[in-house]
Amino acid sequence: MTSIADESRRAGESDPGTAGTRVGLKRMRPRDPAEPHRSATPLELFFDLVFVVSIAIASRNLHHFESEGHIADGVGPYLMVFFAIWWAWMNFTWFATSFDTDDWLYRLATILQMGGALLVAAGAEAAMIDGEFGLTIVGYVVMRLVMVGQWFRAAAGSPSHRRAALRYAGGIASVQVLWVVWWLTVPDGARVPGLIVLVAAELAVPVWAERATATPSHPHHITERYGLFTIILLGESILASANALIDALHHSEEIGPLVTIAVTGLALAGGMWWVYFSRPQHERLATGGGSLAFAYVHYIIFAAAGAFSAGIEVAIDRDTHQTDLDGVAAAATTTVPVALFVLGIWLLALRSSLPRWANIAVPILAVAIGLAALSPYTLVVAAVVMIAIVVMLEATRPTAPR
Image 1: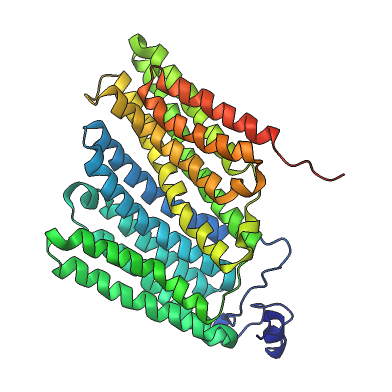
Image 2: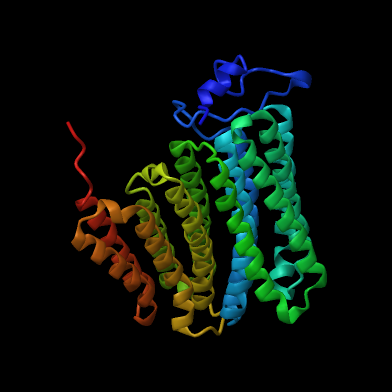
């Protein structure tokens, strides 16, 4: 297979993507997966902020569903809206690690995707509450069609990856047509099965395209991007903990429970951050299968992090008597997302580095966090178990060579 360096040399470039062409554009050459000091760009960070707005709105609506006692009715729509947000973010992130040129057209295309994300955010409430997915579908299709254009540009700029790029472009475009058909023609009774089929089709496109020619990815850049997005998501739970303190100032009779929510919420969020970053994850990207697993398992991790902040808000509602939700159910809205988050990280990044006893203990303790909803002082118990997991991970940390 032609190497990226060979392809660049034939184009007369010392570095892919540095040579200018007409109207200020650069030829979209593949980035070097071994490029030193590769890190997230300001454009990527700006892009993340728009998607976090969408997630915050989805999480807020999940909180309302849960607080009103309609947990099952809220979780399904939340996961559907979250899929649209996560899938568009993830596809941009992986494309950027392969073909980011940072010229004016690339920036404009990225900003157009951000506009689509704002449409998804604007339509999230109607989608989750009323089942009206029109605006969400429009925003999603806008984001995905912009990505089709990016892949056509990559096909033109990188002959060695043309087959894969054209498969991406064709696959994405075809599925968008099916989304529109689903929205306009499928009756309500058949929408859920149709949705499942379309999600499966979206997930299948990268698998099919990468079989033609594997696109290059920079492991450290990808793990940094995922890590930064995780931090932003956990920031939502920090905000929820701050809300507990703010409410405590206005509900002096409930100040003890609200301060407890704030402290334990911070402990759980800090523990989730600690667990996520306790081991390097870039080694998971050494193979195509490992890269797909890394990409797809993060749906669970990210969705759980978003739901955790909603659970903290439900706990506040419970202690300020703003919800009639059963105590166990209210507690589960916080503990179950934390448990899923820990299990996702263990499955993805921790198993290969832990001794056998710890590989048994960590998932057991993660399940214990979820089951803490059945105990009194739920958040205190969950926080203590989380601390135990963190201590275990530190005790089994590989010793750095001297």
